[in-house]
Length: 179
Image (tube, rainbow, N blue to C red; front, top):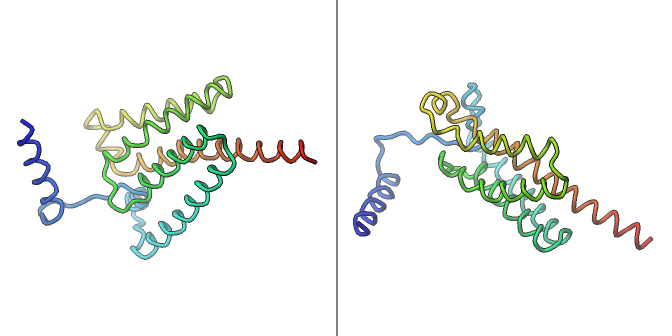
């Protein structure tokens, strides 16, 4: 069984590298635009990726310096996973499963610190629906490839904003205590 898994894995890697019989459908941030008939040129997508990489790096440094250690680690994990899921040019539909853990943990933290609330409820429901979007064939066909990048951007963007607000609140409170 194990050797068979290695063989299947090697075949999959080889087919992805040299097999031109199937068409790769990117599901990154360009997918919603392509779906509505406004494809983004490769140079434009590259520029957006580079700008977002700089924003991601800035956010990671900000979280590292401004949040408590545990929250900072979760915020950094979420931010990096968001970038990889939405701005990686080779994103495939199953790549979005990677954001479920940091987003779920961040929503749980939000729920605990804000004692529930509308934002935590909406984000948890959206994360759940996003995870189920590939289960039923007709729903998957309707939502592919545009839904996951949009949903993940909404979820992660809201959580990153919340972490950013928490870090800013800490900085403001420290300034008031010192001044």
